[in-house]
Image (cartoon, rainbow, N blue to C red):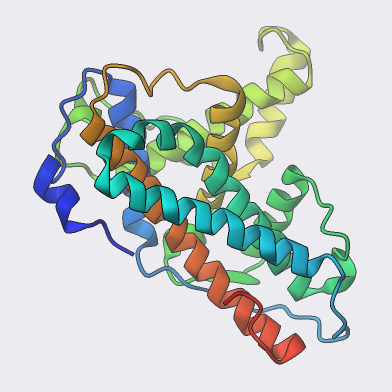
Length: 285
């Protein structure tokens, strides 16, 4: 799914006039993933055929997915006719987008092997870990190589924008993507600090914990939805400030929406492919 022509006509390709550089940086992260995810699809190379019975909770999960998708579609339609509404929609799209993708991943995990997840009660972190293992073991494979790569911290630790580089109209998406992975690692480091009740990483114990974590931890683009939902729910939305104009909010919302739909369509197709094998029908219409 691509951006509407009206967006480019009204704001110009890559033209951003916001006085809020953090907004521009985050918009570029989303544009980057939007670019990578165009025509995205996925394949599963692991499938347990042993159980053809449906969990009683599967229908409820599918209905929830449809409701979230319908809500996002309606907000996108409204924002196209009323650009100022995109400011409100932009605040909540991080959460709605994440829950759409999260529930699709839950259904995907169930279809791969129903014995693993009959109750659909995996936590967010458990689900992210299971998806990581599927990607790491090449059981879940995307047609875009960017989404199959799991980064080590050493690959991105020195990546950063030079002064003013993140504000340019033309961007090197390869570099932007690595800056985004570095940003995701930053979020995870902050989470590590909170989970261990560290005030900082100055003590020997804290430094060793951080070192061990950064040596072993892997991060992929699929985690974007999770960490931006955390950021929006609990941490920092200051980059969505009053210095951002309505057309820029619309660009942000539209790019985020289309990125979400690109992932939705890829996972929906995969889910329907698996459901036809298991139940002889597509479960997401």
